[in-house]
Length: 367
Ligand SMILES: [Zn+2]
Image (cartoon, rainbow, N blue to C red; front, side, top):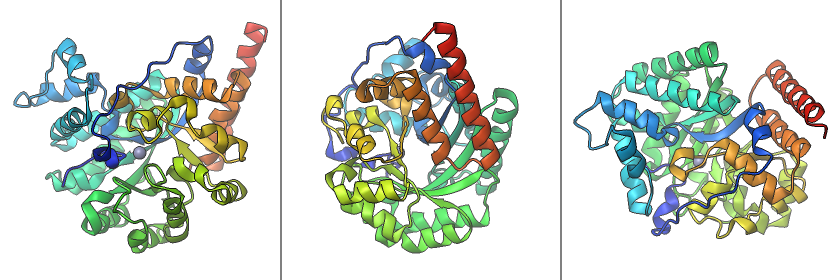
């Protein structure tokens, strides 16, 4: 089993291009200070070079360089196999509960620097417990990091435990058991990542049924590298409440209308889609059609350091693609709050913070 990050279908795209670079616009200072929520971002996939250097320093036998300059080179992706090499070497650095805690807290620190106030982090516990990290120790580590991130950084974290689809039903069983029997306090949702091709959604129904019965929200990846039928399958069989990516939903107007009518949000990750070639050209990204169809669109970063991006950059990309000004960006940020699994009071607080920040910004800049 290769623990492939989202989307594991990268094997179909062996010549992964370097993500495009986007020019800074005058909206970036606004975006940088805008309070934000992120709903689609992966735990290990969020390990920045800084975090990897810290982990590597704890495990000097690893092949990962600890010198910042060498590490920056190491993180400059050339192709798919290099991406997998780097990803696996990061996985190899996470060996103990203390590594899990360090990774989680430091990911929150990187979020705080972007003024991300709330994040639902997709965690794949199967990958860690399979590698020998004690399951109870794993849960304690993420929970300890969550509480510290909230107290010390002002970043509220929640968990989505996801099944690595490529590892099959054994991983589904194990992930469900960990979610249900060892349910950590911060766990709010249940997901399915990995490849879509050859990994049909319906087979995971019994596991999603169990997770949903325990009060977890259903948030599978679907329609990223396969067509709209996968999204329909996720809705029908897995009772999806939000869709990871859902990029190819635009191929089916009835599906778009269904998503809009039932307020089923899409977790859109523009730069990831280009990096994996799920979308050929950023100028052709279907986020416009989604918005035009009335779908609740949220903007996310997926595996940000691995795609050379972060959430602020993704908001900049979205602003350009959708022609948004500050008010439009604030509305986009509030979409993520609405689509989140924060409680009602938390949603109100964060939405008010976004409004206050935006009003103050517009007054100060005379816009
Ligand atoms: Zn993902």
